[in-house]
Image 1 (cartoon, rainbow, N blue to C red):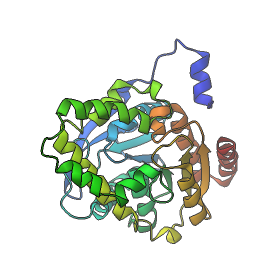
Image 2: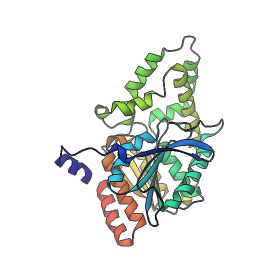
Image 3: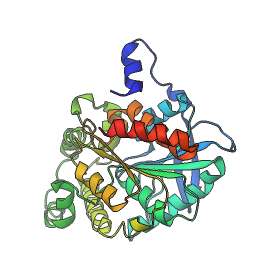
Image 4: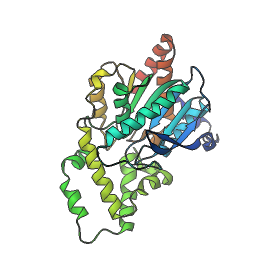
Length: 324
């Protein structure tokens, strides 16, 4: 149990994080209009640490709302965005996805670097984009946090999507499409089991955000086909890992049913100077399982890479304790 969790447990009557702390707006990056969720100072301030949060495939910036509120109450400045093709962002163009997302993230970093020292953190696909920015971005990044990034040692489910496309094509060619209500029912059943460590704590609001992406049979097959292409791209997504020179925190989740904890260990081994935290009680989206705990981990890492060496020693000890 984290310190934040202990405090909340000690005072069950304490109010939840204030959702009004999160500001919502619209901006454009690399020609893509998107929605941003933001907390902290509205204007740039020298020396401020700026957390930039990227979501995963078929998700949106809303996945970070609880963690953003936690970070705001802790005094941090942070922003989460809808990646192109997801949430309220404009759609992706045809062709490879990762280069388009690279351009978007690079433009986002160009803006955010004006606010202070940038810590880039991403979950799942967002973790992939954070890693790619760590060795290719033209703009300064103080540190990177990769949470459950795919492509290193994934589960059988992710591998099946990429290697065995025939079932998807057969399903898409059925003469009688599956009724929309059945597609939504199946999605509502599957989503909590894939994304949470414990499906019993899944909140209807967050589950509904995912299932809304599958309103009917056609949209479901389109998303699955897009996922197949993404898995194919992941085979060559990390060719520059040996060029990472900035601090990297790798977060692996023991109850992740999409990206195994072995994937995080593999990434850690490929970037020797990285730090690894394995949380056996977290699922694929720890920002949904334990937003307070994840926000606390982000805060410790940010303090370690943006303050003097003495602080880094304390943070390293804390991360080692979390990993244990």
